[in-house]
Structures are given as C-alpha cells and as structure tokens.
Length: 157
View 1 (cartoon, helix red, strand yellow):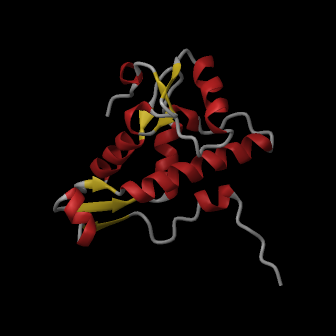
View 2 (cartoon, helix red, strand yellow):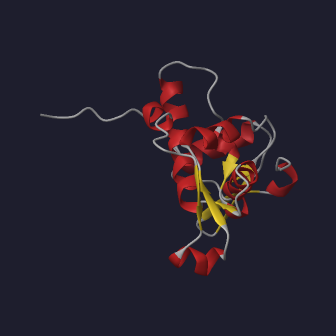
View 3 (cartoon, rainbow, N blue to C red):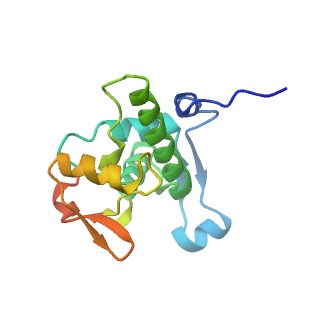
C-alpha cells in the first residue's frame, strides 16, 4: 500500500500543535542564551512572507524577530522558521503551477546577509530574475548570490 504524499499546501496548513513558546534549553542555550523560543506555525511564516510588498525585502532573521515579538518570546526558532519559509516557497510555487496568480512572493525573503535562498523553487537564477524584475540588483559574491544594498529595501519591523 502506498500513501499519497502531502502537497506543499497541505504541509503549509498543517500546524499540528503550533505555535508554542518554550524555554530555551540545552545546546540551544549555548548559542542563544536564556529566555524563551517561539516555534511558529508554518502559516504564520507564510503570512509574514506574503505581506512583503513589491520593491521590499525581508530576511529570515526579521521574520524570527516578528514572530518573537508577536508571541512575547525571546527569539523565534531559527530551524523551524527556515523550514517553514521553505515550505511556504514551495506551496507558492505549487499554487502558481496550478494557475493561481496571487501567490506568496517567496523570492523577497532572503537569508542572513541578503543571500538569495538557493533551495527555493527555481533556484538562484529564477529568483534573481524575479528580484531584478522588481528593481533589485543581484550580484555574485564567491559562490553566493546577494541582493546588492538589500538593507535599503528591508521592511520595517
């Protein structure tokens, strides 16, 4: 018996018991210190990504900060926030392939330092094309692609 794989959209809307705020413990406390961490629901990450307007950008770190503020936590979970941004990107791409025209603009969500996320649908070249169409300049630094002067286009937190 084979089980049908969940679609990206199903994964996006499967919040399980999230969001939840927990104490920072163990290995995590060595890097992030004391306090609390919010483990967001996937749809919360998508909502933030979906509200980045044309011409603007956001980083995963900013998304984590917004989530921490919303849930009155010390930090937003770096691991799950990144994974849920990836799920959001794939759900948006899946929707676009199904003919939807208004999808989450995942290409506007960058990694730390303005780095284009190579794991998003279409890879770096596709996102570079979408970002340049919106007026951003993407340059190569070593083996990474970054949005030049990305700080000037970041949304306010």
